[in-house]
Image: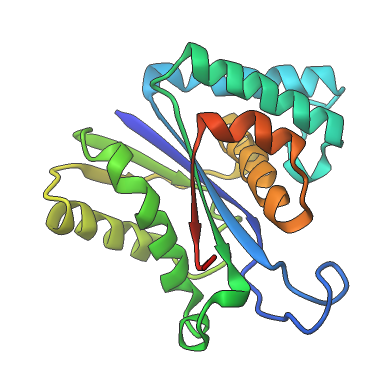
Amino acid sequence: MRHVFLDEAGDLGWTFHRPYRHGGSSRYLTLGMLVADQDLCKHPKRLVKRSCGSHDISSSRELKGSNLSQSATVEFARQASEMLVRWPLISLLSITVNKQRVQPHIRTDPNKLYNYMVNLCLPDVVMSAPQVAFSPDPRSVKVASGQSMVDYLQTQLWFQHNAATILHHMPVESHQSLAIQFVDVVAHIVWSFHEDAQRDAYRLLSPRMICKQLFFA
């Protein structure tokens, strides 16, 4: 069974006449994905546990990228990069949309945009697997996607990519999943590079990832 964990950074608002964090929306939205076979999922989970221990984060609290200091984020990126070198069958992916370039008619249905972004990343890394457990954080998916996203992805895999992969929708709350917490930090690293020009962690981690962009040109 291959596992896919999905989380996001940024928002799907469209208020650009005000500064972000002062009444305006984020200018970018990043989706992050961790893809690994079941026996490899323990490695990113262990990294989260180490990070929590290093920064005195209680086991009852979530590790959140937005709550980490810049130095802690850089250290996380360094360890994650080393993990990916040691375990090359673990994949990290991201896709970032420049929301200010999204056409007005697409903004009316952010659900379709979100699903399309996932579809641009997911099939290539799962279509060789017969069974895939797809686990988004339901609190993170702020649009009404849920099962409709899985139906769309399943259709794309079968008909567009001629893959026999079966997707199993297994949403999991981030506070219950160290893997989702791992992806939260990864998505935050990529998003912060675009939104706030935070480069240090991104430069460490991005060479080991598949990073895609949408509506940047």
